[in-house]
Image (cartoon, rainbow, N blue to C red; front, side, top):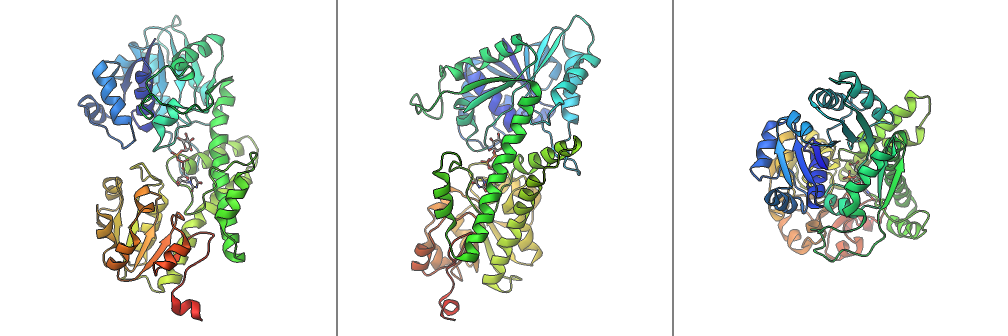
Length: 459
Ligand code: UGA
């Protein structure tokens, strides 16, 4: 079985690379010819752990190839994975024009029957529309197009590990043959008969992936329902954090204990600046929109979105409270990516903080281990420092915006000697308030005790 992947963004590249690593022949295509040329020459256009390694090994073994000619990819394959973007429109609705374009191209270029699999995150019922478009534009009634939905649950930053060690593989299909084909494609992952680059032959013995066969509509809904639930969970934890601040409790103690209840689970209860990235914010909006379009009110998700938007305001008001006047002050921003281990800055809470600080007239000095180049395309005139300690030099406040490990292990003793005022506002709750107090810092975070200056606390 030869596979094609359309769209070489992060989902497409990780899917293509991992399926090639698992032993399939994969041909990748993208409308962006420059990106294809980059990939052909061995350059990796995104930062994702282990991706470079498997793209190099599969390129060397000839398992993966790239073409800017989509027709060539479609004609050469039996199964086509659609991994193109579905960005939000102004209304929150998902823009499906890229999917529609691909459907038309497949229909016109295919010379034999195909299984077309949507991996892009799409609203329920898209698969049915996709099948209609494929048949409407088809050149011959002898060519059969079957459609399936196979949502991805990868997280940026751990995408390769997530692909090889999924909790579940969901395939939404209309017939048994499609389910069997997809099971065969994922067999190496289900049976664990692949070389896992993340664990080098010593994968943890966690539970095997469940292979779930559903209808197409259900598979599409599973993806939106999962992402929205996780976003809801984060907003819930954030409201608990606000409550903790007001009544003098500690959010980590509360969420830790909550998470030990197996019905709740401990993940996605980290309070802070809230969720960003190209998935949660847009998926939440698209899900609310989809529900509204069929007469179902999803106010609970609207509330989660609202809570998330307020995170930035709450953070900025903490900065105000600590600094009083922000204008003209040198501020170090630690982290630009929307989360650690990625260079993705789309819908990044960190960039919202940058925007607010620029608006206030601060002298912003930003740093990030890998996301500076991408942030520069949005804010070309900021002062950027690759070296974290250079960003902190002379700063009147350090604002922690991304949970990079490097920041977790930051030497605050050294930083304190470089900064002009020992003040940290932590949007990711990376440090212990008592340790920061011992080091002589004023320290503010979310849902935990504030460490004020000695003058302030004496009042
Ligand atoms: C998310 C989902 O977790 C994946 O399962 C899904 O496949 C993916 O979207 C997608 O639809 O493509 P991702 O956006 O890469 O993955 O990142 P997450 O790790 O889910 O984090 C999202 C945001 O929530 C980040 O800004 C993160 O900092 C924030 N977050 C996460 C919190 O604020 N608190 C938490 O406890 C967890």
